Length: 257
Image (cartoon, rainbow, N blue to C red; front, side):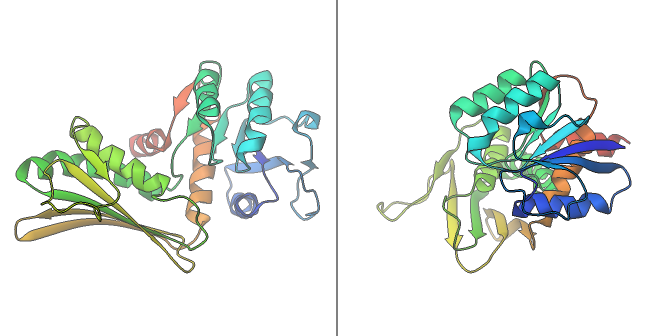
């Protein structure tokens, strides 16, 4: 049984993870951390100050905010607790700190916690290595809800990075073609962002060749896919030696079982 501390337990993702863990037999949330302690139906103690948490655990899942991550990393280092780091908007300094921390404890960080997206990244590497040398152009179209602040999405960039990695990082990313009048260069990846409605997350990676098009698509119908991935990551990370992990490691272990 993997004992989890849920950092950001009363937020939208924290509550979703709480519900998901209740349905699993291999994990339990033993404590929560949140600046708001108004929710009393979690079934575990909630601490407004992480340093007051004295509950024994195997791993921490973080879905909070960038502002809370520094204190969290201090806590995990002091307690030698593995950390699944899901908060977005981290600064370069915080990302560097997470990398340094991974020399002491196990840290897992991915641009997207969905198992499907991370499997897609592996498939894209295989496809790019075969299709790009055969003259296929590569385009990425991502769609998200109208409230999303950044564009393109971090997931779109991660998918582009997976493709580019298979192509020796020789391709340039292009986000806007409105100011140029020229034919499409061979070695570029076009990335387009759509914002509207309540779209949770939709990503298409298009390989367009002569007389044929191959499209890899992933659609998230609810944020539960990210919550499920985070719980799987926590079960994976518990007991692991120090190192910097991502969701591809979770997928690899599941395939080898």
